[in-house]
Length: 174
Image (cartoon, rainbow, N blue to C red):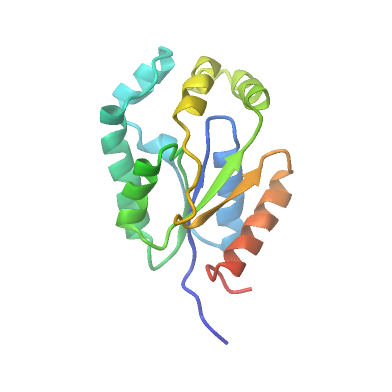
């Protein structure tokens, strides 16, 4: 029997795709820690997004570096982090710190995701920024470790599909 180290996963996608919900459920299923990337934002980023202003790469740099450090700290123990990881260069920062990282891209219809964001008024990310996120989003490339999942499935189905993908890619023991 071959032993695999615990998986290291980034659940990615635009706001409203279910990154936190699916990521937390996946971490629980895998028995590894979960980190929500929103918790890594400095106050200045939250204020900017709350005002309806999209973040730029300068804003994202320390945030991505903090998430990358968390992933690197969990390389041997495994972990799941939610992070938009919209651009390839952002994913490269994360994978550069933790090369075993597997990206699960939660993808869905723009209108469905905008409605989800609008339905959570206590969150700092306004629905008005959905279009900027879709404009920034770069699909996973063939040389990246990852897969795309359709958010129209239930959370349980998305977690089941994630575990199946991770098992098939050698990320977890079945």
